[in-house]
Image (cartoon, rainbow, N blue to C red; front, side, top):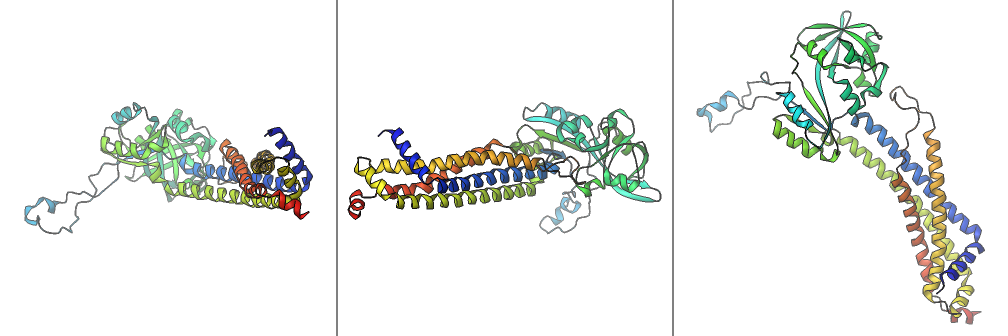
Length: 419
């Protein structure tokens, strides 16, 4: 059969009821538009929320966790070999907070081809001295270049130059909440006391704001050398080794491997932030569910319109079959009508969805909790557009399949006899 002839007949039937066809196409267009805009906005929101923590979290973290001594003295005595030991007298006083032989570990990890980069870190609990009041906090000793490269540290420094941590001796960048409590400004000297009672004056060179208020109320940053000096520790003193991998999915396996190899505790990002991944998955699932529901509703509209068209065009279908068109040809005609509506509506939906996403992306979104965000976040992943047009064609094909099959089974003799 001549496909051009089938296409011309489908076009004629489509234009004969152009208002209803246009309504069906608008339904598909609206569904695809909302599908694209909703997925883009929800995934942009997921990227924003996860980025607040995940961008600041290493894929693998090596550290020493303080644990009670498993070798209690009573276990060493043969007299109580068959007894039950409930005595726990030896505490964790002999544990090491720092990572033993950290320089060799860092060198070995850097040589691993799976590793993108390393940022050593020192975590030091301190007291910020504000007159007669001491404020509990934490100073993180960091390599500012590595921290900025791997964890976007510089993006969250809202005032001052982050490189001053490296260039200015005895300097500190305070969290926004800490700076407000201390009434401190850039250039001021902040008195910091360690848990051992040692005090060191540090010059404030910047303000850090992560967007997590509780974090910013206690956190501050200094160079590794300054933190070692604050704690009175040697140059080899490191409490954390933060590792970014080239492939995030390798983190659990790499963490187990490093824990065994380096005899240190290791935590992977999936374990540390599983709740964020769960939240992202649920939000994305809801977005897909809403979008697909809209497409299914549009498909019912196309189904109803094609059904009505078949009832109104019984004579035309009978004449087509009487003049030599087979049931398969008639089915192709009505499927062609459905797919034309789906393709036209889908393409327009992609265009309007993209324009709506651009509009959302320009809406101002200013909040003190998210200093790096100025507009609503939108994700323009091409995958959403491919899924959108694919679902559009699949939905309209299914909506047109059953009416088309009904049309192909019409007996022309019965229709003509009835007339």
